[in-house]
Image (cartoon, rainbow, N blue to C red; front, side):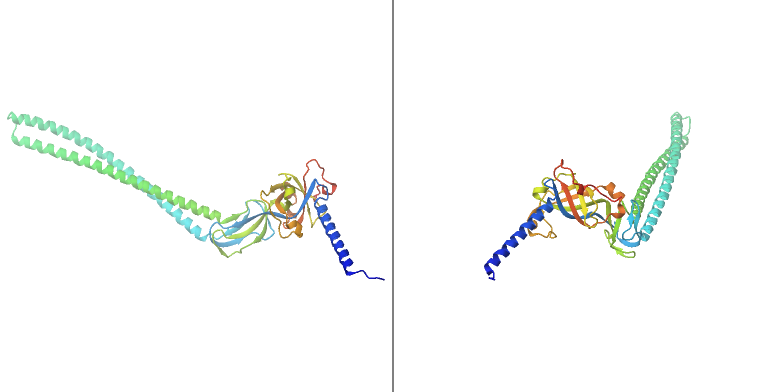
Amino acid sequence: MQRASPRIIRILAAVVIALLLLGFYAWFELRQTGYGEAFVSGNGRIEATEIDIATKLGGRIESITVKEGDFVKPGQLLVQMDTTTLQAQLNQAQAQQQQAENAIATAVSQVRQRESQKTAGEALVTHREAEVNAVSKRYERVRVLVERNAMSRQSLDDALATLQSARAALAAAQAQVHAEEAGIAAAQSQVFGAQSAMAAAGAASNRVSAEITDSQLLADRVARVQFRTAEPGEVLAAGGRVVNLVDLADVYMTFFLPEREAGRVAMGADVRLILDAVPQYVIPAKVSYVASVAQFTPKTVETESEREKMMFRVKARIDPALLREHMEQVKTGLPGIAWLKLDADAPWPDELAVNVPQ
């Protein structure tokens, strides 16, 4: 039997390779549009929003109340930082505040005392003015009588001395009133100073109290502890991460679509997710994000032809209500496929009907 020539063998091999490539291309296209042109799919992984619980102030970790994998609720204590130094600062601020309150009370008492002394001084001034008025009239009468030689010159001198003494007493009383007014102003200044010191001490107390409150790191949502990045006893700087949470109400799949298909995807469009780990379930989702700028597909895409396409990133978000019903079954990182319906009027195939765990 005559053997085939090497040239014929090479031709046959080339034909076989071409047929294989055509078959792979047909399989790839059918995989992408296995339910017709109204549907398109993309590979992706389940992801969720991650929250880093970090310290607002630097300090030592006193305790961590959660472990990896724990579910947490809003307001639940996650981390307690050491507050020994802050508590001492708070005690000092409160003592300064009490001291300022006492200083205010003392200054107010001095103001009232000065005001009382001023009132008494004003009464004395009124009395001295009456005395000066009476003595002045007596002096005038004596002077007239002396001019008429009805009284001696000595009587006029005595009346003048009495008048001058009364005027000196009036001036002294008036000076005392002015001194009391100055004392009132000084006491009021002490009141204002004590009030300022009290306000400063109160502000310091409030600040330290807020820092003590911030030393309790609380959960602000329903989430699951993914991992701990620090342990009790460690000293962290401000902003140091302690616990990483996964938001179980914000779970989505990220995948990529070619530009010709991404341009037809509408925000809020229905999506069906099928995970490799549980292919018997079909999870409903909606498009929550379509990238506005094209980018190359990730390196995980296996075919060279697909890597050469410009792709758009798409996020399909799972309904939070559905997530709450199956919170303990939510896991991130699972690979799967997302099916989108480009034609709103096209019915979903039976294979893509919603089917979630009961």
